[in-house]
Amino acid sequence: MSSTDQTTDGWAQDFSYDYYRKLLRVLQETFDVRTLSEYPECRSNGEPVAIVRHDVDVCMERAVELARLEHQVGVRSVYMVNPDTPLYDIDDERERLFEIRDLGHEIGLHCDLTSMMNDARNDELDVDRGLSRREETHVRDARHRLESIGLDSIASLSFHRPVPRVLDGPPTIAGMVNAYSSALMSAYISDSAGRWREGPPIQTIPAPAPDVLQVLTHPVWWAETHNPPLEQFLSVTNGLDILDEDVYAELVSICPEYGERIDDIVA
Image 1 (cartoon, rainbow, N blue to C red):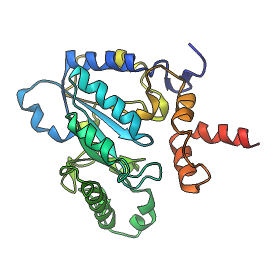
Image 2 (cartoon, rainbow, N blue to C red):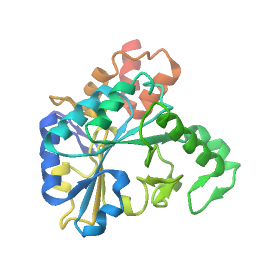
Image 3 (spheres, helix red, strand yellow):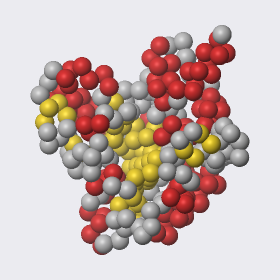
Image 4 (cartoon, rainbow, N blue to C red):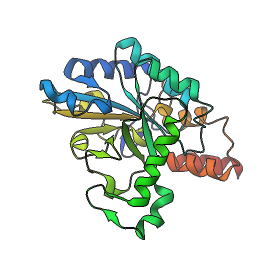
């Protein structure tokens, strides 16, 4: 194992599609794998449920590849799409989004509230919702933009770079199932920043199986063959305009090592 494959606080040894197939098979053997909007009704039969969620932060093309792979093995998951990101345009990505949907997957809203933080401090928070009125309006507007390209009604929500007060939040926000609700965060594993903090995900699936397990991945880290996270990130983002300040800032926020590598190249 390369030192670049083992980060200081997580496991990053295998982000190949073959490993992802193995992970899906383990989930299928143990859980009833469902989409986010199917919760909590999917718990009615008493079986443990796994929700596979993908936050599409960078690359829609990689999201389509994962969606096709999942379809081949009989898994339906949820792809969370950010209509405000500077890294892709949902109008330009309409056909890819339609393909993901037509493969049987769910499209959800990945909402970024970071631009609202200053407003939220001066706005009254709703304790039950964890959001200010302006933030909830922003969420509803973002959902409308996503639906306006021709997608079905958006029924699930996650937050991009969630602030602490939305974690372990209410079951629904603005009428959408909240991925960060307390019930859905009780058992949760994620490949955020290109590493699994808990260790190899197949080995760290809780046993006995919890009532609900949420598995979060980001398509940017995955490929047919494994690459260390930074190298994988560089290959996916190669065509983006990093002279655009918003693009560069977003890339660095997702992968801080990317900024360090670019700074070294420029220097």
